[in-house]
Image 1 (cartoon, protein in one colour):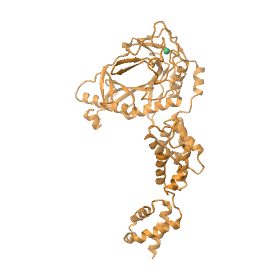
Image 2 (cartoon, helix red, strand yellow):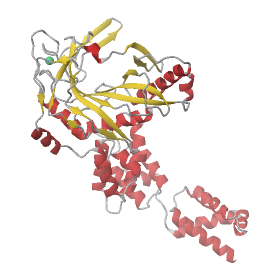
Image 3 (cartoon, protein in one colour):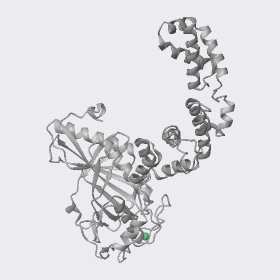
Image 4 (cartoon, protein in one colour):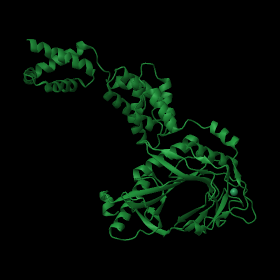
Length: 490
Ligand SMILES: [Zn+2]
């Protein structure tokens, strides 16, 4: 890392300008132009036919489902769908590209415009979305490099943002939002590690306040949110150091090396003329009729933004919680199941607070715990929350019980009994404990009576320590105040 990247100080001189290109593998049953199945982690070269392995003389046939999925995405981000678009050949040589070209869309994509709103309100506009086929994969090992064509021909949409992202954090937030949308739509797994959701980042710096963009670098090989943020931070400071030293930033494609935490030059960046695009002669123009688009529009699920607004309005939870709960479709439905199953007396904001807090914290600490494979099932969790809401146990005791439920499973009521965590609201019991403490703390009582009311907290602390902390805090406060009041009168 550069010194400055380590210190994370960008002088006020430059503004980062970031644009992202995101490739999403569409979850269709078969590939984009042939009937080979697409599935992750198959034996290499087992899902391959003459079309996707580039045999001469074969003809591509467009996958209708892939087009429907692409339309869904365009509608979800409020983009304009072109009624007529064209597939193009992008020529380049690479061992995992058997035809020597990729079928993509170039000057006439099916979709333009649209955008995504971030939690803070900033709108990131999109340039375009286009449909294309994926390339195969080169697998490097000690024995050599192998080519696996299982991925060749899998349908992709490429989502291109305008260069209007201004920080690594914003880039990460934008990607998470896009991923939430494709998952809500059910068109892509959104799995960065497995490569079904991939991102390249274009980064440049411009002098603060200037409109003119600087020379940009493209960073590839970003396969986790963490790497994306780290690589952008690194690249921003690398460019700033060059500019400060009076040097030029070379227009390059750079590769992120997660082991060394740096980007390194891979090649000079190609411009589009290098690819010699021309319309794909084996495919007709793509016509998207109004009826087809509107029937897909009618089938769209409720999307994160709309769901978030509904949660705010219907459940009276706070904005931040509404954003967290709707960031994932499964999480939102887990929360809504809890809401539907709760008893009337359990306030919804309490459920939201516990799901966003304790539940997610424990879940994220355990890789095997997913929303499809719950370690603490919803009904047990609700039972615990009921106890907290009815003040059977304190919040603190509730957290302890939840930890036990995570560690050993079991029923919250049994655990509360076993650990003797039930909150005591019986004032006669509380009074007895308080009287003992006040009796033992003559000096502090005198202080209190002389006007130092802060000592009150000391009494509370002492009583809780002596009794194991199970007293209802409100009752405890009341009883202590009454006893001290009596002493004042004596
Ligand atoms: Zn095939």
